Length: 397
Image 1 (cartoon, rainbow, N blue to C red):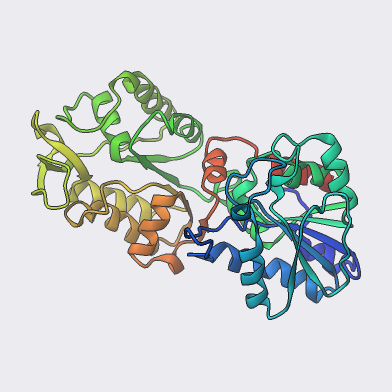
Image 2: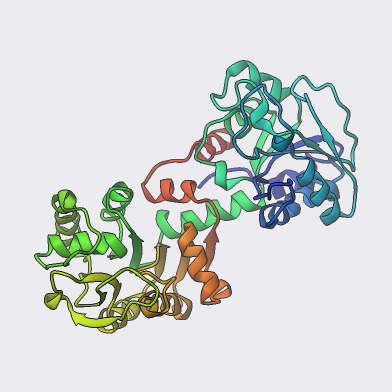
């Protein structure tokens, strides 16, 4: 994937004494009093800011926060708490600047200013050309370092990348682009993908896209139940989408035509009710009763999938394979997670529930790359070219 890296801009001396505009993802959770309750995204943004400072740049940072109405400032929309936390992490003042689009502020080399919530600016969401022009004039170098917004063509994520003198990827975004390229554009085979979740409908396009490229497509959760129906198995009263059985069959056939496979569970863990204290029963997939709920894959299925994962050259993971929040129905996801951790192949994982499972089983250091992008990660799996990737590649040409 072709793009300019911020590190290259710095190495070429093009950031020294220059105005550097960093689009970060500082959309952090806050309590009712505006106190930040979790600051991972702010901490993740610090390397790019330090790189710019160390290069002797005049640094501007902005982000969205929440869902403000354009042109209507409310105190709860302010990045003030974020600026204060960034100042603590940097050990240097971070001045907050409001009404900044027309450039009515100063920033000197060695200084960091935080530009107030960018989604307050009129035209941001729809990337209005007049806003994009103004944004490009604010800086000498634009640094996109917010993968979580890479799937949105907005003023501070796309418009400025078209109009700034130099547009490049910061360390966070560059790492995502490298990992995605390694996993999907030029993967080491076999390429195994795990796509799990409650509904086929929400991930049908992902399944269809991956079915053209992967060697094994492991499905889990409610998605697996729909595929079990497609394979002619009974699933009792389990969550499924019978109207999408035809689509599931098409994915199975598309994989089979390429000599690839969608492994269908051979055994499952069932219960009579969806509750944390429900009694778990392991059954052969062919023996599911009419009043059973399938809440996890069984040990034989988990062992077979683990063997495939350990032998994989590349693994893409999106979603737990069972109700891993309940102890009785977590073993499938635990086995899958451990197999990914033990695999010598390159692994990339993303999605909120996936990150929760990684944290629960303590395998963070054994996953090749953990994507924090959410919607952006899913759109990549769908085979879409993200706007940020497209514009940065074009500017690198």
